[in-house]
Image (tube, rainbow, N blue to C red; front, side, top):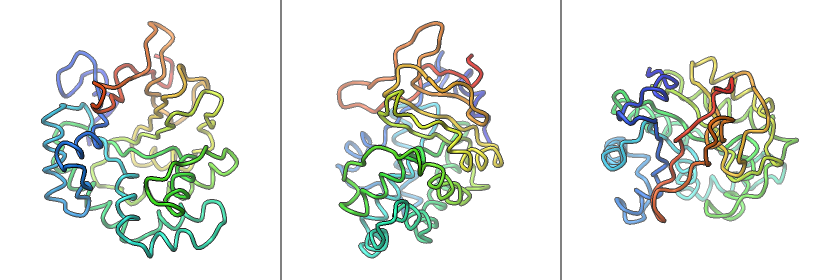
Length: 265
């Protein structure tokens, strides 16, 4: 395994400052003419990631598990129907993350990307558990392109239990870290990460530093949280820094430029 936190200070690309690129959507458009990422073909998938890495030299390879699961839902109407079979909050997410074929494809995909990553760390990128509830519900009701509603703080811990069980799939597969994406949630809308404790415990057990990404909050408002190694996109106290933006109007999202450590560094 690669020491993820060490690469934030000494980037694999040799940049003076580590930079992660969330380039999947951009590379899908440019390399696949807008077609789906070949999640179920390890050889094609590693070629895709290799070309993307050749373009951007990201200091971490981000594996977007939501895109993988969206591909799985779009590929199987029976899975979507099963997700929508109950209106109980969390049922869609529980059904999706328990799908054996999705787990098998995800495991093979992560193993293949990790095997080809070299010294570049591999980071699993998922929504924060509260957001994941809404994403799965939207997929069940209207497909992967449906816009998810706001996260529900009261159900975040239940979602975290489902997510934690799913993440155990990737034990021993060369994963170096976990990124929980809060999306555009404002500081007021952020759920305290203590609700994500099941996920943070799994990450700690496997030695994966857990990082939280925020776009809608100009600074991290929730203080130090055990098990959270850093917050990305949150401006450190000194020196001031703007949240990560886009590289070009249609380019990939730059996830990491500056970061704040869990201990305020």
